[in-house]
Length: 440
Ligand code: GDP
Ligand code: IMO
Ligand code: MG
Image 1: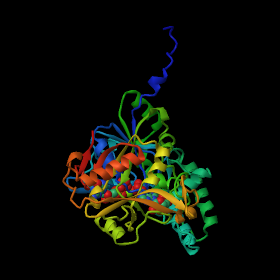
Image 2 (image 1 turned 60 degrees about the vertical axis):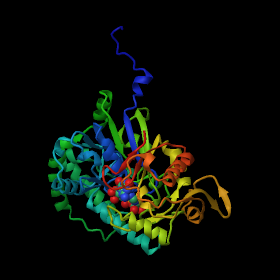
Image 3 (image 1 turned 90 degrees about the vertical axis):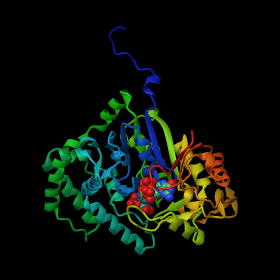
Image 4 (image 1 turned 135 degrees about the horizontal axis):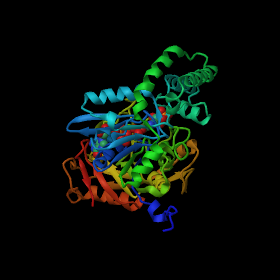
């Protein structure tokens, strides 16, 4: 050693301490439950994108928790929770969520919640604009069915560089007030009917600034330090691959990258630090909101999935559309996310069906295609090709070992593994924390 700082070897930099959990379909795959399962051995649980458009459910000892902005890992008392720079934060919503969960028993969050100073703020005006845009689009028959949580308008403000970040709120308040007035102005020019009580909003935000100050960190340095110290990091993806702004069914998507790239940009971590990428897959497919859905079932089987699966949006309470498992879609999202394992949830919902189907390919205008159409109207026209398998017509709810599953359920899981070419490591058979089969 000559006294100069030792150069880090490539292998030291590539310590793969970060495990990522991502939605592999159109959302609501059961990510919250998987995060809860793995968070028991994590030191940090992070959100990297999206906002309170997400709704993640965790059921512990009969108590149902729903998380929107907070990482679901917050209920694990030993884990710290990070809201990264890529997330958009509606502060009134965040504090409502904290209060609601405190009443259900959430403790000591003040010592465990960390918010990035680079995260953008969602204001009520963004939420109102989201509603107004939807109203206008609906008149033209082009509504997206957004959650109206202000997600699109806030990411638009970010991209047009008029957005306001957490760090701005904690800086000079006069400057924050000027930025806020400019933001109101821009939106009122677009929507003259938009009403904003600037003075009362500013007073409200002055109070929020005091409340969040102790929680705000430079999360890039914080994460880097923790990873170097060997801490285990879990990233909780929100929304899902088919809602990704680049790779999803554009324009019927959300406004962030919900695929693996969003983990790096939304937290400021190197891709070399990512180890496991777990794709969460419902045993069938659901979608809430508008947009193409090739395997959608508008028949009794779709209704059965909706009713048995209690398929209602956690955030908007809308009925989710249901259909067969689309393996062609999973093959597409695997190309983007590179899953190292899959967690198949809600297998129990298919327990009563005499047969189950997997979409293994698409035909467009009568011809087989080998790509996911980028054009939403083409995707709306594709005809899925199905592989039909016998159902198991036996309850799987009490099963805890793969070997105890009915033979036809085993074959269904094995077929998914074979076609996606990714091992299935967990199978969900019920809502609660322990209703899961782990395959070693
Ligand atoms: P997320 O957005 O991906 O976290 O999923 P949601 O919480 O929006 O929706 C998943 C729903 O399925 C929730 O009501 C969960 O409690 C429930 N759930 C998760 N896994 C299972 C499972 O294996 N079986 C059953 N029956 N329900 C499950
Ligand atoms: P989780 O994390 C299901 C859908 C909305 C709408 C579209 C755009 O619970 O899986 P947005 O408000 O984001 O501009 O809406 O995206 N959407 C979701 N659907 N689960 C989600 O999150 C979703 N987040 C957004 O329904 O169609
Ligand atoms: Mg959800």
